[in-house]
Image (cartoon, rainbow, N blue to C red):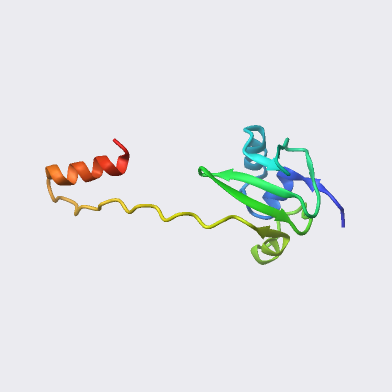
Length: 118
């Protein structure tokens, strides 16, 4: 067992990204930080390191508990990472209109505009 692994390979192995190339691209885009510093794809991660990964506009905070270099099953991957991400705030539900209900009323249009931030 090794004591370090590439950050892109580890993120792929613990199923944060679907492909290793997606993990590499995220590192290049500056969306991955190891212990507070931007990480290159080949940077080594060790047990106890904190990773902040930006996915879909939100940061996931992960602590490395086990070094993995090969992709493993979901139960094993869950043991290799300690998830410290705070729960997200609930997203406001968009008003759903029935299909074919016609043109929105003035009140409905204002509600839609308010939800879109206009």
